[in-house]
Length: 237
Image (cartoon, rainbow, N blue to C red):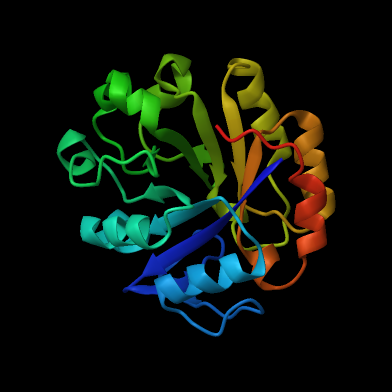
């Protein structure tokens, strides 16, 4: 089980995501850090546990198309040991091209914002990027075609249940299992609702490659010992 911490940025600071209702996101309050500044939060996370990957949801880019590629080049330079997964609200190739071409940076293409599905057919995009199927209120956000046609799916995909983010609902196990049956060769990551080690164990049992997690880390429901037990023998995608 590959456990990847999530950081959400809104108005330039780190916020606590809850239920996908972004207008209500508040500045992060955490047992792991006293800061809401991106670089310091990453520093404090890595001081707590040596994560190898980090997922960032740039809500300023997703909502307002305020792209700051230089910020991520700086993070690549500052944290050379990290692989960054970045959802920056990519819509088409022009936006994709804003960001550094680095093996450390993997752009997440969210169904919520992606308008040019042909982007998912470009060989270099398919090799380096990650498709996120974004689900809210029982429906996939964005084009229905992206769900009906698994040929668009990348080698690594995220099942993002926005309703479950930052809640105690638990992951959407049934949805994840249905996606895994559609395309068994995809490395699936679950996102949204992870509460504790029991949820992580169940995700591992149904075959998830990994999970994106935030609230359970910052509230202390997942500790270092939990992560160590479930992170052994990981082969990164």
